[in-house]
Length: 414
Image 1 (cartoon, rainbow, N blue to C red):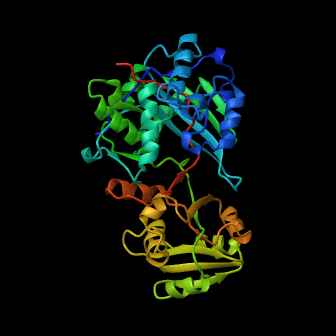
Image 2 (image 1 turned 135 degrees about the vertical axis):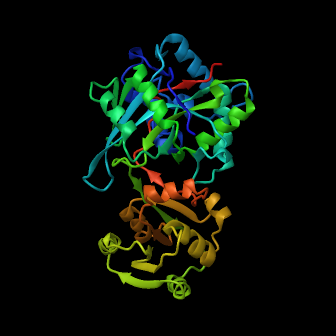
Image 3 (image 1 turned 60 degrees about the horizontal axis):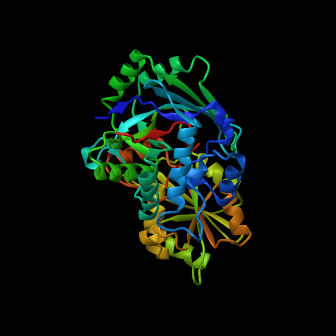
């Protein structure tokens, strides 16, 4: 089953400056505005490597990937990045506030290397399909930089919390690194090099299956690189953060669907079409929708719909294996509106919003025609789909917070 390994990552040295000027959110969560801010913080900010600026003059010998490799090699040569002296796992905690609430939680796991496995081997399980564009981009960066800068976020089942107990011991002392990100999340690292603890983690993980929570594109890029370079031992492993799926700090946020550019869309006609499958209830506001969601309804699919100044609740009985997001995509988006899997993949007529009030505000101000409002998927649902070999629609899960890039860097050297 799962093979995990301690490693000797490269990390920013004290001479690089304050860690909060160096590390970044994952590359696919960096907006153009964030990119500019990161660039302004430090000449050594990781964004120069993982999401550099493209130029009109880019060519085969001078482009975003060659410049990324040049920055990285310069930082290695000048001591901006320094390799840790002994192999270790790294306990990693994130203290965060759930958006739009006052609830504060801590999510803890550990960073290490995991063996890159084909899905067919039954060790690593996905829950999302990937897109070719992001994988091509990440593959070019990996070929040039020969390094992993962010982690694949993995879930493992450990109802007894045996591994968490080892991590708690490690986290009882002062952290080796601490940084607060732009969202107020406090990230802390503790090195675990004690051979007994390292062996204990490896032994306990050896019987586990892994489910990708976040980082499907990163994982499949690593898998493709491993196939491309069977002679490189380091390429057969990838940097991962492992979190117990029973951790109380695991949170998934809802991702709502906003539709635009629908010709002749009428909410009245749409609701009429749904009436053979769903019960429709008009609602006063989002507070009433939240109240309805808070009621026990394990056996019901409940979807919010906002259009114009109106808000509705669609309900139907839940069948075995039904997920709210899958019902939305299969029965409503594809079945009634013609927005099929290809359209979703290409983001034609569809975009996404985090936050219920944010999504509804886009409808009220006319920037979208209709919003479909979802409750967040549960960790249990994600694990169930993943371990059963199934997949969920794009943007089905938003594990919060994200794992920072640049805390540890894994070099492919042999």
